[in-house]
Image (cartoon, rainbow, N blue to C red; front, side, top):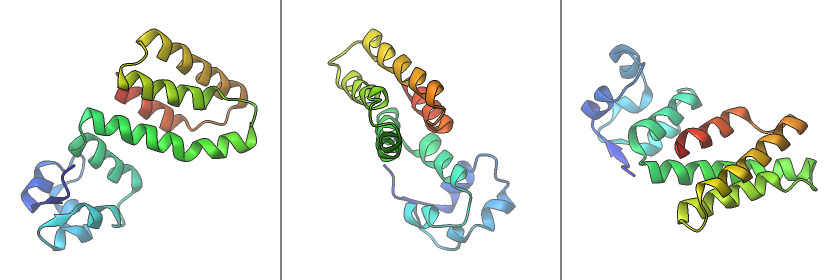
Length: 137
């Protein structure tokens, strides 16, 4: 993934930011602009997330980001619901699907089970699940 950017690149890939709003961002004060300086800036997390996932990352990198984010929050869910393995199984199925060791039908079966677990417990983060779904489409 690209780690540094020119001001022109940032202007060409600024999404909903106006040029004046972009220019006011702290990371625009240096060139090249590092990915780290964008990540530690005070812009909202959702904007950082959008920039990385929609402007920088390939489909494969987005898939790995989705898996990693799901793995980060999974222990929180499992501490509250130690007997419910559906979310972990869905993550493992997603990895297997990407690796080509299971088909779409098996992945969807595991994903439906995880969604059902989330609906029953009402605990999984909707934003994260939507992201996972968007990168698998």
